[in-house]
Amino acid sequence: MWKKMLGIWLVAAVSLGAGELKGRWRSEDGTSSLNIVSKSRLVYNGQELSCRIDAKVIYVADDGEIVAYPYRFEGKRLLIAFPQGYTVRFRRIEGRQAPTTASSSQNALLAGTFCTYSGSSGGGTSYSSNPWVRFDGRNRFSYGTNAYYSGGGDAYATEGGADGGGTYEVRGNSIVLHFSDGTRGMASVHFRQNSGRITEVKYGSAVYAPQLCE
Image (cartoon, rainbow, N blue to C red; front, side, top):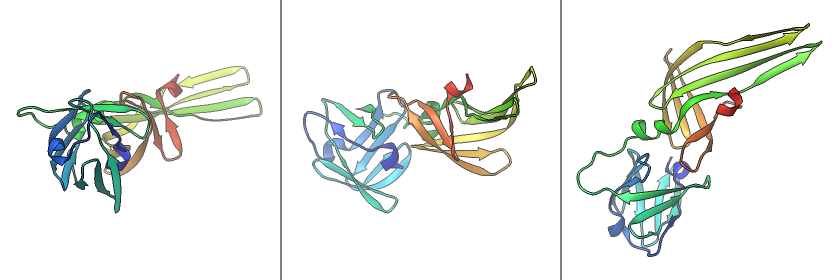
């Protein structure tokens, strides 16, 4: 999770050791939290991870691999560049403050209606459907399908209501879907804006995006 969500390059003027890193940090947009507990343990968005920290690199154990994350500072800020090409700035949390949880932070990055497209044509007729899923930015989602038909001089459109739904959890680049019937599904982040906001989601082989609803 850390590797996918936090492919790290920490840019700064001075390289410091684990002693200066130790403590709680929060991204300036309030969506992510990082707690350096010791040279061997850190917590990112509520997930505890084993690590080793030296003067310039954080080594994190992730899915059986040891992943190296070079780090530096810029003044009092940690600038974290994600592999998707955007940078997140962290500031140290002073005093007593409740840590940001994944449900209250990462879920907020996924909100709105996302659609995908499928269609067929032949014999002078065409049919297309727009499956959609709607995320509320907290932890609930619903889904359905809009259908369109044209042929023989006629055209029809049906705006489908919700066929089902459930709750969701954004965990880095993974999206866990808990359906109301008790089953579980997995989607993934296909594209993310520089702000961290998720604007494309992949479920199975289909990509869902707000612009495909138009």
